[in-house]
Length: 148
Image 1 (cartoon, one colour):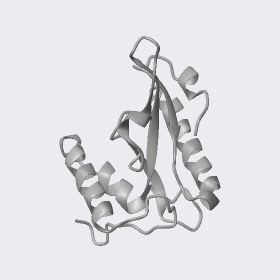
Image 2 (cartoon, one colour; image 1 turned 180 degrees about the horizontal axis):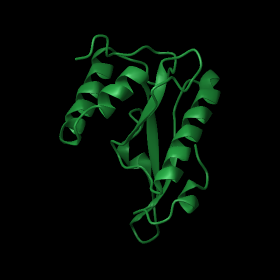
Image 3 (tube, one colour; image 1 turned 90 degrees about the vertical axis):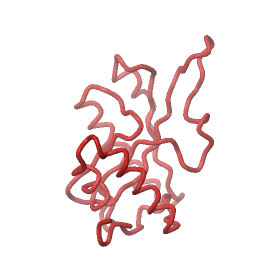
Image 4 (cartoon, one colour; image 1 turned 90 degrees about the horizontal axis):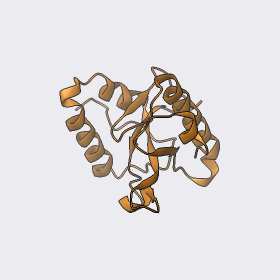
């Protein structure tokens, strides 16, 4: 998880920190994904919104197919845990979860026309759920073989 990203990216609707949830022995993979995504955020000059895809043409993690992330609500936690409320009732800090994507999954989403991206994201999340994919395991294989 980042600590201080909110101060580095001004102008957002709310302060934002990003995190990746993985198996305990895969913490180094989470650090790499957070670092790569943070670099992209700083280059863009804006935080993430739900549904943003950050992807690479090559695996980011050695020995895996993981080559990007999907910004989302953590699928293992209640939605309300993604925000720290402010004293005035608004949002003080938003915690954006990053779901690791394989190169194939990220490429498939990135190739989508913007008008179709939301539908493709829903389809991908359905496939991940239908296949009972362990989203905490960065060693997982793609669900897009062949592409739907």
